[in-house]
Image 1 (spheres, rainbow, N blue to C red):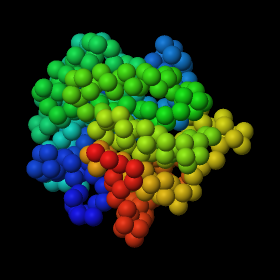
Image 2: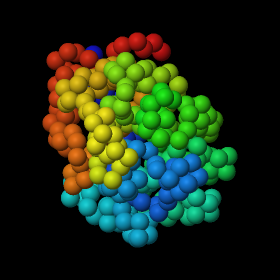
Image 3: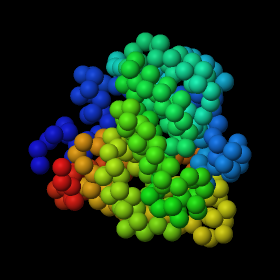
Image 4: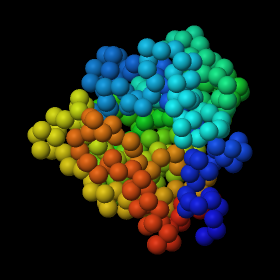
Length: 310
């Protein structure tokens, strides 16, 4: 295998953005002040059973501050790691297309006005992509690079009901097609270790995603944080977690299943340590990433190795 992705054996987000913009590009996580139809009663009041009280936006800015203020604070913080670079304004917390078109446009444009911003990343649900929203996203995509993140988590509708995802696979497919019709990049979130799923089911989700024309993927490990619906299953003894070696082996197999042109945005999550209950090993992010890289190298595995034909 040639080193087509620098020092990685997969198409990392860092590599992709450096190739696209010619320098380091840094994500600044923002909280747009939105909620979610799976929390406000439109679909349910419970939310997905793994989702935290901040809508998986623990590392986003303070929703009590303006988008501009959040961005500036995030930028200053990131300068401790990277002295210079361009920026992606990442609307992370809750559902960031769930609001009026006027409010959405205002918040997106406020982010785009910030110095150094070259793109937007918008996390949302596929059932919150009305035609009006899609047209707005297309409008934004003509002003800056844009990708939209959709939380699929699993291909299985049975598991989706268990985790209270709130929509079937057909709705996800419709959302992906809408974005594809507007040439907007789609990044999909998946979770390994969901209740009741074995290795075959988890990798079936990856095989499915490798064929539907998405542009990016985020891998997450199922972890339990305080205040989520998962706590009830945990208290009842109905919840188990992957061991670190199991997770690493799954990720390596998933990487090999993905076409080389899909950008891997994340290989594992960042659980908030103060809220984390299990598994404790999930907080050792760099050890996990190093173990994945070592396994890819020692076993000569790379993205696109298995079951992929152009």
